Image (cartoon, rainbow, N blue to C red):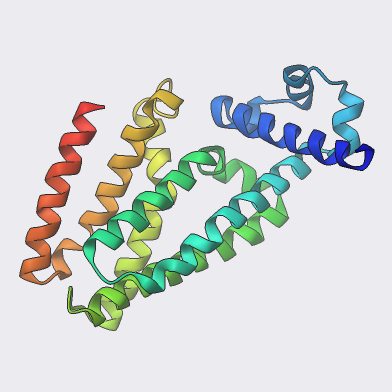
Amino acid sequence: MATKAPRRTAQRILDASLALFNRFGEPNVSTTLISSELNISPGNLYYHFPAKEELVNALFDRYENDLAPLLAAATDIKNIEDAWFFIHSLFEIVWAYRFLYRDLNDLLSRNRLLESNTKDVLLHKTSAFKSLLQGLELSNALSLTAEDRHSCAVHMVVLLTWWLSYEYVRDPRNALENVNAEKSVLKGAVQVLRLLLPYLELKEREHLHVLLKAYDSNRSAV
């Protein structure tokens, strides 16, 4: 039992740090606040994470682990409904680690490891979206050139990565609060999905319009 205690404490520290970073922004959360939130001594926290940068890196590792299996599933997407589920699931992960997105530029300026890892994640996201588009093309749901495929994939990644920053600028005091999670996720997913409209075949385009109308109604209700 004694050997498991450090892992449990480290997990609690990471969980509390993620909640505080998401709520207040990483630059505004000190290790003192984290230890106070957990009712542990600063020395106990430093034993597990000697610097706040190590907390951020550990949370980024967790984020990558959550993201990897979903990105790998992009090759299985064959229709618009699959694409919607994939994109919505991506936004749920973005929301769960939203401090990484809201504070991205500041974090990258102070953390070289995070800078390198974030570039890798962007490449993986772009590759996943290209796979999504190729899958839809193979199933005759859409038609686009190789150049369009790359351009569309990049646009999808840009929207996915900076959507919450856009939401935050529009409403800094409320946009990233937990009560707005469903609305923010829906809005972002819908905007990414709309990027497919110019390339879809008529039947798929009509189906997507039906889906978007339904999701717009759900978004208005939350």
